[in-house]
Image (spheres, rainbow, N blue to C red):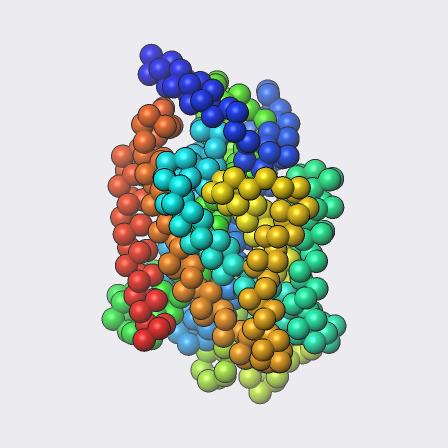
Length: 455
């Protein structure tokens, strides 16, 4: 009887909003899934959205923090990487469930349940978060092009403005193609760092011990600051909006409890698998920093520093080679480009959801990209392509993300804990309470990170 009432509510909810445009309308429900196939064949059909989500948790913004954490404190902060990944899995599972059950994305629901002025303010904050996310991706891609091909940094950044055209082309081929390309780029990143860590020969016992939380992380101020940086760079607000939307790309019957349950089950499984890969990549970054740079007192605050260090035998020893540096640059480019695709999609979701923007897809995506790239390009021109100055934007981008995170996370928890909205798929009590504890802790940590960064 419980499920019947819940399904009746779901029907009323969808009928009441059915005239509104679906989230990412051109790909919503566009991918078929088998009805009576085995577990792994069915999981394969649902595999894809998780890769796009995982990209946000290992974008260039994470690299400096993770490698720097290893270089300064060896393997101790691996426990922070693990904790951040578990939090990501919790939040993304809630995000997917919200989109699948309601047929709406987080931006649409937030706008529906706020005033016109409140919705506009939230859109500004969220748009700033998208810009902040794109800062790391644009800078990473621009610097990678400079390192690989010798392009001036300003030219490299300008080139990234046109990679949105690649996304437009790929959308014509089908969303599954985009998922496959992003998954391939993620595989490149994973293989590059797995190879470099293999060559660095880390201390296996030290690595395992690093995943055990240590009290000194909270008492050692420099270590705590770096830990806050890892957490702040890992949990990304735009991924919560993205996850609530692309979870709806598979065909399912929103009025059928069994169909919704199946979609949630396999979507979350895909998300957790891909976020586990993101966890491995972030661990590899920190392990690489610990194995190669711990105790060398090297300046590793910039991508260029890391690129040069990998070919400097005085820093990394006998394994130093130009090939290691080039592999690092290739992985950086792969990370920047994959993050660009997801960032552009998230930008579209936010514009359509918050301000109901209606314009041709090519113009919408180009506008989203230009909004993000303009401040970076202006900064680059003002400082005449100075990498050190441009990369300093990364710090400020993390501050913006820290500010924006509660405005995405708190509505997500409220909506998924709403029995009238979610029906039988409402958060279980332990999920509800755990998510609120995580939210409060993250807000406190982010406020402390902002305070420390500014003052």
